[in-house]
Image 1 (spheres, one colour):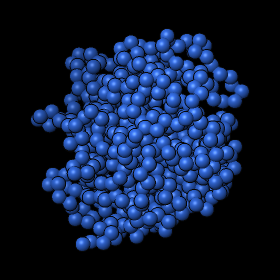
Image 2 (cartoon, helix red, strand yellow):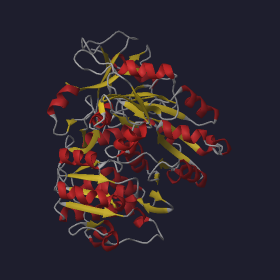
Image 3 (cartoon, one colour):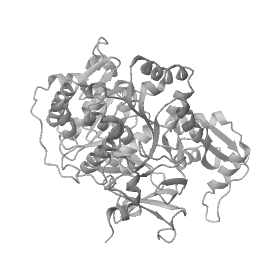
Image 4 (cartoon, helix red, strand yellow):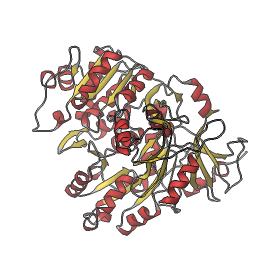
Length: 555
């Protein structure tokens, strides 16, 4: 029988404080907040434009909101949509939903109406928690879809000195609830105790999967707990030497995505690190925030953020090696130039890889171990990976390219209400990732391509089919194929090749404006090229690679 090291030879490259296997506690995910509130009640949990909420204050708000949700009829297993940017209300709501055994449905605040309705139709949410800026979209949505409980807040309601809105001032519909008023009126501080099992669903994260059609990756209580302990132990060789009072996390990553939820929210709570919350990535606001704090323990980010940050004129003046303890890049690969720029500015940066379907974690470079240029590192403890020939479904030889298959405690249970796609993606616990890679003799993984056509732009996963289907609706468009092409700042940028109906004329701006009506801003093609004919196979399959290579050659 093979030993653990023989089975997972890469384990010898993990950091000295990262155990080869983890005894994950059999607890519900919400208990992570309860434990930190008990051990360090006075430590600031969040800092939002200068207003701090301590761990204990946060815990009490969570209990009060949890009981308020129960009184409104939300029960264990019900889905509750979170349609909020980073703010204290997101943290309250997230843990309150988990506290009653309901299921968090992550929703992107910049979704268009059709995108949002699609996600809500799939999950049949019983509740929706959102903010005032989206009221004009939520009103028609609630007329088209039955959402029994709607709760609305104003972001500045939890900023000292900014005043607190009211139901009347926000112009809420009859039957809707005002967040602050609901929280204030709830006086029950007895924590709900739902009977939860490790494999109960806790979170639904939308992802495009293999077809480009959004699907909800269902993550369990066990997934969230395992991911939290993995990410905390991955950084233990550094964080353990930092006093609790000094710990913080720059939380610019959106908490409505599992990357932000695990690496900012759950990590911050478990480590008793203050989350410095920013509702959006605005480089000037980020730079000012960094200037105003003495040090930042951890900043999980994406290449777009890091490129803007390291290229900013103030970056060279900030003594960043002293300011930052650790920066992590994820969601998309960092270029070699970006990695070298970080080193030049003494920024301690590492990279990792994960998916929505793996609770954002999976493979990572060791914090204090060997880092190989352009490698995403080695698998986390308790994860197994295979590099598989997608045609034969047999493992390839070491050094050869194949599709990454991964199995471990953070792999999703399946796609919500989509058994067909679940079967396509999961085989005996192995997740087919769609990423093509090779593994070297030390077990380090190098991604070289993708079997999917997903475009990674600015940390977002963009699926070409979403854009194609919108442009197909334009009366002047006969055919369209969208691809991602390399972009120094965004990682990739979206380019659509369009064939117009014979005799028709159109401009790039005309088509982009059409896209803006149906797509979130980050999906709108930045480049549009008109062509007389588009390359397709005899059965109509889009030959995206031809167009991508053509665009790269022209660049």
